[in-house]
Length: 262
Length: 280
Image (cartoon, rainbow over all chains, first blue to last red; front, side, top):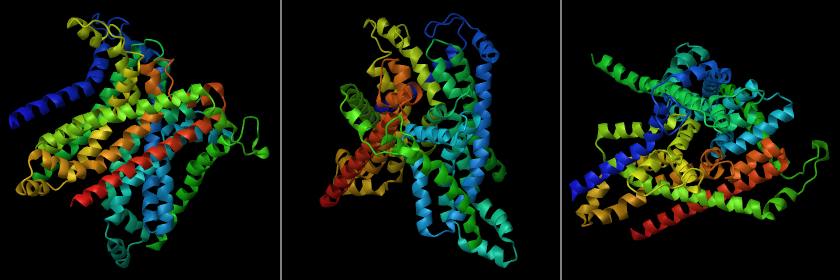
């Protein structure tokens, strides 16, 4: 009885993994296809990669996606950390009020946040493009950063910072040398979430951008109207980049662990 | 440490501008009609009346809800057993499986959804397989099936992870207690595991239903240009038709529907809790 259920659960998980990974593998394989077809294999070729790199809108989209993700991550991590620390010293009313407002972009459907920002930027008379996209990304990243830092701050012993002050540290030193190192895991995971949120964003970027400033998601969306295997090449580049980052993130702790063991 | 308080103030100004003001704009546009400038703000329900008196829009709304509900149900049917198997897997394997399920979610949704276009095509691998076993071709792409498949594909990891985290938190000794008291495995599951994992299912439902109702790129990519869900209507109003007032009203209607369904789910959850309490 037990063995049978073990087998069926193995088959179930296998099918699930095929479901999850089939599209990814399919994309990678067909990015090397010799013909334009998305269904028939006609020999190995790198032509779609060549086309991708000679297509300026694609290389631009990669550039915009990466620079916006890096800028949004740096800014939202710094602002999110500062605010989370400040807020932890504020009264309960103010704290819950900010948390509620922060929940809005997290809980609202993305399209609602997107149209709100679209109308807001146009009311301000801001030209849709790089700046509006960056501002929007910073706006939706900060709540996630704060969400991952706040629990770390809650479990922090408040006496530690006081002790540092008593021992003659300036508030700035207490902040940098005592508080920040202890909430570092929260800051790092917050930054990581911010980066992937920004890197992968489609809905909000799609509504707030303009003037030819496209990120990778928008490009895939607009190009998908016609059969275009360059999308597969672009997708493969993204898949490899993300997988590399994920592997590094998952391997670093293991290496660290081994080093400390030695 | 009170001096740190001021560090929060700039962000409070920021959210007032970047989060609260855009939300207020949606309300303002939804309750006014096109042509009204801000200075001649006049309250009207015209946009809402237009929406609810048009059969086409009501049809779209109905279809969006049905697709989202079906997607959510399928996600529970696939997600619960998966989460259960993962939660019962030994330590190393457990970590491995969680990693395997989260990995794809880190890759761009558009990219992963677009991959299905090739797979589902008339001469794609699924149809080739069907032909090989003699079932013949079925039109898959540009159908409701493709849209639901795309949604399940994108959102089922959320369901699995939510249910898994509530199962992982469960105290295993409760199951031992149940079997000591004479419950068989099925009874133990129904009376102990299932009720304790319900909060995970509930948060999984919210994480699936919400993006499923509002999604507009999955129906566009997999349903084809003619396939319209409520998200596509909003997209059209803003980016093609240019009627921001009507678009704002539709997104408010959608937000209210989501709020109501979240409220109902929470109520059902509470009801189950009360029953569980009674059984004790």
